Image (tube, rainbow, N blue to C red; front, top):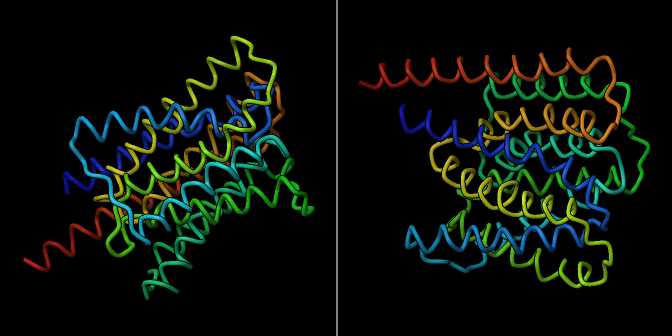
Length: 285
């Protein structure tokens, strides 16, 4: 149980770091691919240092590569979406990930979600929709499409440890390599390198991508994919709030209600899941 709780904490801390992404991307006056190339190049230094310190050997096989594509897709689509639509739209559509986690788990791993998983998923998703009730635009714009694709890719990230012969941190490393290789050519075309842009890029690369992915990989070792994706519900609450406060992108009056629903849903889900695990452990003994 201690390992499970520590894993949950690491996933939660990763979500907190992810939440600064919207704001930092908004204040950098570059295109989405350029930002993604720069931040993942910096993240590779952080992740490479972690691999060296822990003496973790990199793996590369078809399953690790599949995970790397999920990481790359999440990085790229989210960066593009934040430049093409509002932070609220981008994050709410990306946070369809728990739905896709359940779908992928059922289709590829033959796992049947229980009522608690489905109920929590519905509550969290409903809360996020309520949170962005007055700003969510499902009109089929390119930015919204990118954000939805980020949600599909993000679901793959939560399933990194479930792939056969997989290695989550290796997938993250190679996914960031792909992101850097495809994004840096766009970065070299940019001309406006302000202090704000450079500081924001370092924050994105070192913390929002680098440290956050390391924490997530550690957390996923002991946290089920559906649970992890639901715990990350704090990200779509904090992300647009930070953008609204510091970038002056408005958030509607329903925000507090939606935030309450998301946070309460995640807390109740984890309490009930913990009790259920305890009961099952006692019955097994």
